[in-house]
Amino acid sequence: MSAHYQDYVIKEGRFIGAFEEMYRDCPDPWHQDAIQPLSEDAALLLVKRGSYSNILDLGCGKGRFTGRLCRETGSSVTAVDLSPTAISAARSRFPQIDFQAASVPPLPFPNEGFDLVVTAELLWYVLPKLKELFVEIRRVLKPGGHYLILQHFYRPDEQRYGREVLQTPEDLLNLLPFSVVHHLEMDPAVNHKLVLLLKR
Image (cartoon, rainbow, N blue to C red):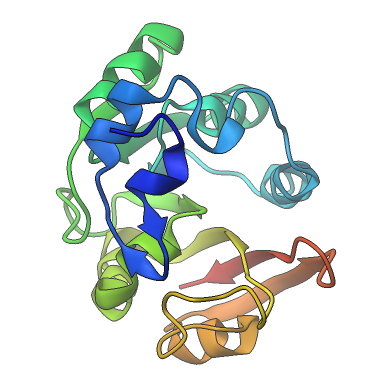
């Protein structure tokens, strides 16, 4: 197959979803190891204002941002990705974190087990199950727990997939069964990034 990661994910407006093959064939998909977006720094500043014992990171990939979460919060972190190859790489890099291979949703965790759930650049890849995902996140969050979203949004002229479900941050807010604590949008004209901190 192609060595370009986008060919495994969304191509010509069609969802491919070959994440395991992508992690086997592409050494650094999404340039995860090479780029540290400002949206991550902003999200971590928000999270560090709180106090979290147990954090769940969904769609963690090879764990770079997960490692930052663990290091900068000092919390116990559990992380999930559907790719066993990505999980294997993450475990070797961050042995102090509990990495698990599983597809989501549903979430393989008991009710009210986490203070904070994180999804960083995950939502485009679970669009048909967004409502189910949000119900599951609400289920595993403790009362008063937080949900952190980091998400890229496409410009109207470049989006070819998922327009019927999600086009703008307002579309996402209308789907969320949570209250908004902080809402931050960065660089909307070029590389639109949304950072949301929500409360159950």
